[in-house]
Amino acid sequence: MVEESNSSCSSMASSAIDPAPKSASSYLDPHYWDERFAVEDHYEWLKDYSHFQHLIRRHINPSHSVLELGCGNSRLCEDLLSDGITQLTCIDLSSVAVHRMQNRLSDKGIKDIKVLQADMLDLPFTNECFDVVIEKGTMDVLFVDSGDPWKPHPETVRKVMKMLEGVHRILKPDGKFISISFGQPHFRRLLFEAPSFTWSIEWNTFGDGFHYFFYALQKGRRSLKSNECCNHVSIRPSFNMLHDELEDEDYLFRTCVDEY
Image (tube, rainbow, N blue to C red; front, side, top):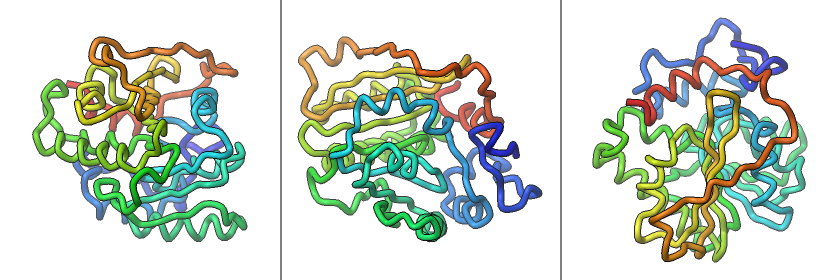
């Protein structure tokens, strides 16, 4: 793997261990993630915080309570903490990921981030309790082996909708759901714009050549014309990203998400 100083992919506990699965279907197996997190110290899916910091700052302020779905071994919450966000909760389905992150934060003396084992399809939180919910590449896992992106398998749709319904439920009025994804707007909007949701949708892209999508959905702000348009907000980053290279595993993952 490439060292973190040269890319968004961090070093492994052992350079001889390659965490990339033999097939993309392994991403759907909880045991794969437990085994991976047991040996991998850090990996950032869809680039690290510096690449979308200019976007996320528009939607989060220090007074907000923030939940990250599927934290894995990412340092996103630590980056948010450095940006002044102190009410942070991370969840992951993997007990291994949770245990290792708890230890990592403890070793750094960080006490402001809660790390819990929980399923994003069955969120254990009360209604309207978070200002912001963030996921980065986590929802994309649900689309692995999902079939035709215009008409995903019913089981895929069921899981994605269950996740989105949970997020919508726990967001406060005017709360925001931030989804950082490989998924293209013409596919994601089919799910984001389900009649049961009240959020508005805007999106942006980041990355050079190989684009990632940054969606911001605000609860209670859906307009009567929301099914006719989606706001694409163009914001220039504060730095040049041309040096950034595409990660091999990101490419492998994307070929199984919305690419048919």
